[in-house]
Length: 354
Image 1 (spheres, helix red, strand yellow):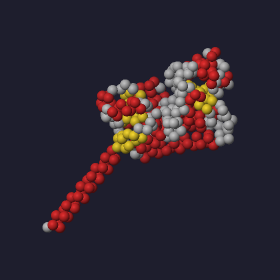
Image 2 (cartoon, rainbow, N blue to C red):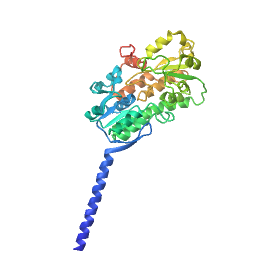
Image 3 (cartoon, helix red, strand yellow):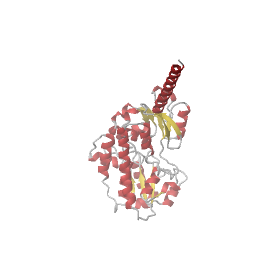
Image 4 (cartoon, rainbow, N blue to C red):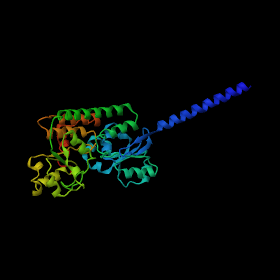
């Protein structure tokens, strides 16, 4: 009798242990701990079905890697870019989020996770019970180790072989272009500078990213250029400061790039700059998002800029590269005219984006 009771007790203990282990495994499968791009450690849902995306470049990669249907809405300014609609027509079904979107809206949409471009936004949402992580265009102390950060984060959050394959394909493609460039420039010595103009707002030449933490600084490192913006103490330096710096190259991105360049070409102040005098002022392509942001088009931006800075060294087939990128990640076949306009920051009809 005692032996039977002992065996019964033993069986009950084992069953309890297995039940606890099973519950722990289920709990583990439902969440994953993420270190986001500003170093915050956050527990987020595993394989979430409903996510809100305020970080623009995050929208690009989520759609590109096959997660478009998981998004309930995106940052409202993306709707102003017709290329986003061309590349992903389902964008029309998304809600237009902004920095002031209320908690009630996120809850109504049953949002499980929010991707934010600013740490304070993510922290505020977490404080109110909504999992949120920061996806930034800035690294710490620079962006050198962050180019693949969000792509790898996507793999960590969603355990899907197709997604992982697309992520690795993009990473390998970017690394291949980057390595070709850095290897070819190993012996090149230069002190030339590049100045980046943010054209997402129509603020003219005097609007930049003034930090070495930016993607632009890392791109410049690959190309052995000095990133001029990091020298400024403000994102809107004075005309005098830019004239004194006198950058060798100027690149202009965003929807207002053509308006900014055209205005600068007709303004006497800027004609003495080396970049204008030597015809070294370049447009940046705009696809689902601006090419210079950390989306899948960043590979094209790097190759295109290498061609322009070092035409005697590089001759990447950028048109083909862009066409393949759009086909691979957005499933769209674009015409040669489409590719030209996208590369030059134009609408499909060849007119400026803004």
